[in-house]
Amino acid sequence: YDVPLGESKDWINCTRCKYGWCCSEGHWAEYESRHTREICDLYNEACSVELFRFNHVRSHGDTFLHLPRTVLSEPMDPLPRNWKEYFEMRCSDDYAMKALLPKEFFPAATHSLSQTATIMYGMYSLDETFFTQADSLTIHVVGAAPAFEMLGGAPNCVWEEIMHCLPAVKKMHVVFVGPEVSNCFADPSDKLDNAISCCPDCVRKSRSRLFSFVAKTYHDYANASKHFTKPDFVAAFNTGMFEEPDTSSWKPSLDIILDMDVPSIFTSYNKFEAEGDCKILREVGARMTTEGPVLNPFSVDYHTVDPSEVDGFFKSSMYCICFRGRTEA
Image (cartoon, rainbow, N blue to C red; front, side):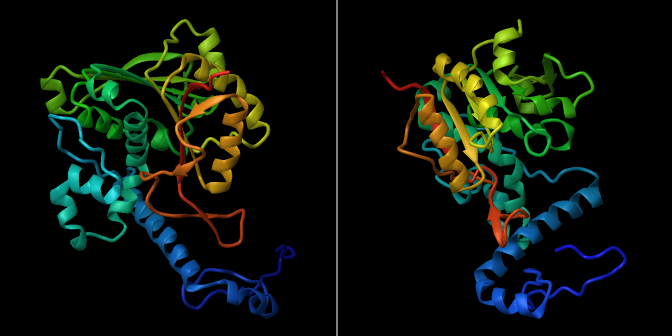
C-alpha cells in the first residue's frame, strides 16, 4: 500500500497477535475471518524466536548457539527421528531443564544445528554403514550463502557436531561453494586448508577439521579448480533452483554431482519449492530415494514470516530430497 509522501496512515491489525495489518476498516472486514488463531500462533512463534535471537546478538555481540557438548564414543544407533529425540540424546541434561529456559531457547538452537543434523540424516538415509565407519570425510556445501551457512561471516563450531556424532572420523574437510561466498571474504578464491581449532577432546584424539571457501558456481569449481576433489557427500540448503535464472545455473552443477554418483541431500523452504526442485532433479535423471520431497525431521524448528505472501510462513530446510547418481537408462 503506497502512502503519499508527507502523509501518514493509521493501520489496523489483529488485537490478539498485533499482526495482520490492513489499511482500512473495509479491508479488515474482508480479511478478519482468514486471520485465524492458528495464524496468530504462527506470527507469535516466528517473531518471538527472532526477537530472542536478536536480543542475544545485542546483549552478547554474537549469534546465538547452543551445541551438544558430549563427544560420542559410538555412532548414534538409530539416528534420532526428530528434534526432541535429538536433544534428549545429545544434551539430555540441558533438555531436562527445558521448562526452566525461555521457550525460544531450543527452537533457536536449531537454526545452526539444522545444517549438520540434516547432513547426518542424509548420510544415514543414503549409506549409514559407510558414514558411520569412515575415518575421513569431505563434504561439499553447494550454493553457500551469507544468510544461512555463512551467518556471522563464516561457518561456526556447529560443524564439529558431525565429528562428535561420527567418532570414527579423524579428519573432516568442509568446502563451501557458491558465488555468494565472495560476500563473506575479502579473498575468497579457492582458499583451501583453513585449519579450524577443535574441542579439547578432539585435539587429544588427533582429530582435525578443515574449511575451504570457493566463490564460484559448483560446475566452475569442478571444471576449473586444481583443488577440486570428489566429495563423500554433497548438501545444498534452500536451493530455489526451480526458479529461473537459478535453474539454468544449477543444471550444469547437477550434472557434475550426478556424474560423481555421490550421496546428496537438497532442501527447500516449503512444499511448493520442494516440488519444483524435485521436478528439476527428475529432468536431469537423479536417482532419488523417495518418490518426491519429504518433510525434513531436522528443519529449523520455528517458522519465519514470508514477506512476499499474505500470512505466509516457511521453515528453513522444511523439505528435503535425498539422491545419489542417475537413474538407469
